[in-house]
Length: 451
Image (cartoon, rainbow, N blue to C red; front, side, top):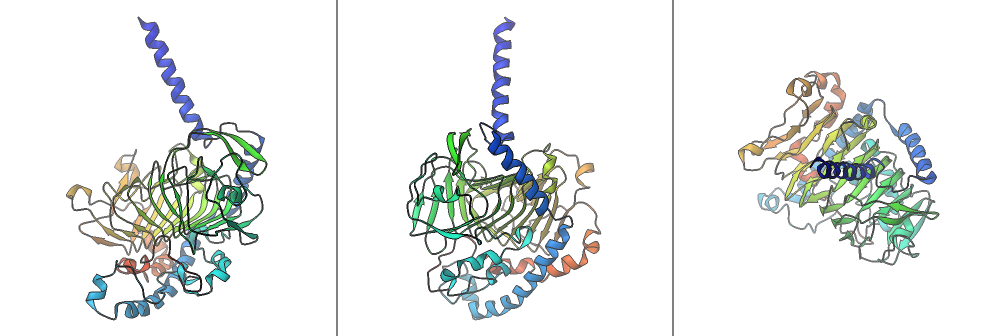
């Protein structure tokens, strides 16, 4: 009687083990010499990108924000004409002159010649991803074909572009919808620049940044991403290997550094919209618009992955919008700076975590759901209060609406000990966030005109 039960249990445990192994190796079916070398190189890059004193980075960010806020005062006068009627029409499509509303956009967006000077964008990253230049050092690669072949891509397709080993600035000849048959595995030193056209990565697999460095993803719509079946997938011009089933993330960052994701619009992916795991660091996620999703962002895959202690991520100027549920972000380990984002919707919580991450929330706007038991912004997992009270989760200059509240923890004098940091950010209080994030998401840029 015990035999069949034991066999079934053994099969269950074995299948569970097989399911775990792909996640540990990032869905690499055959961790061959090529992947081992890439993993080793990525480790070296990440250690170089790691900032031993993250307050230096956030302070520099604060100074840039202060400069932008001076312009913002003039912007508001111009945009509203000091009338309540125009303020109420805030969410209508804007058709006036170009408005600079945050320090990243201030760097490039109101220049009418952006299409002739695309690589200007590479000088604009701030936060922990500052210094990410993508394909600035390389030539332009024009995507002309929306088709996809995951093992033998045609020249002119997006997959053919991202597997090249040289730096490339990838642009698109026309608007297109790209359905990826398997996850799009990128090489280092690339920019995917969707400005001037409408590019949708949809109804197929997502984008994978695995053991790479120096990547910019800008101006894409990424949505309705599904789980990839796995199989033979090309990851470089000279390497095709076995991949197991992918998770269905919109953008998966695995063991990578110097990553900047800017002005993307994302919704409805099978797993996360953006996940960063396995020691990924030096990342900025900015000016994004996120809607219609459950688990939005995961930073750190496991409480046991102490490699994520080096994870440093800036989440800035994003709009977390309609029909979102949780994980904006959910963090393990690491240092996460959440600054000047607009949280207009959540159904469970907004910011959560476990395994003592440092989370600094500054100048965000939080509008709580109407239900009384959903007002708390924060959620801590897998630790009693006596433990999580030691974690550094601080709120400064945030705007709380409709009963929203942030449960702080850690040293109550943390702000005093980092006075310059907080004074700098206070020039962009939560009350300004609707303007700072006004143009979040993929922009409707037209050549010859400011975006």
